[in-house]
Image (tube, rainbow, N blue to C red; front, side, top):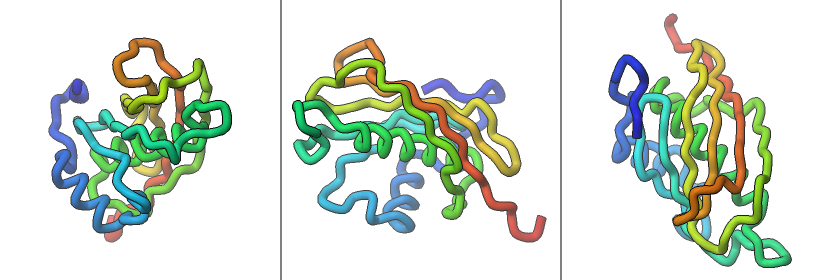
Length: 151
């Protein structure tokens, strides 16, 4: 996973990120763990959503809500990779373009932040079906970051 131009390490590495998210957001794994962090760089990440039939919609395609969950989770991880342990960073905007029908396979999300400001972080996510080069969805999103205490 490419790092930011200054090659600074992420505020939380992959293992620390997973442990932190498991502690503050355990409900994301309700019904079983399907989201996994594969890589984290400063302002970047790669997330895997394991295929599960509960993500299907009528017609046999992976659902839009499942892909939106994957994208929002990827954005949250990328934001935390810059701002560190900030549980109250929240989504303020999420826009998704569905480009083609995903395969009944794991989905991979590649996320990078376009802006990491003091109060807002803006990023983009490309989602692909495992093993295929063509994107199934393109997502942009904005996160609001609360002010640091004592600053």
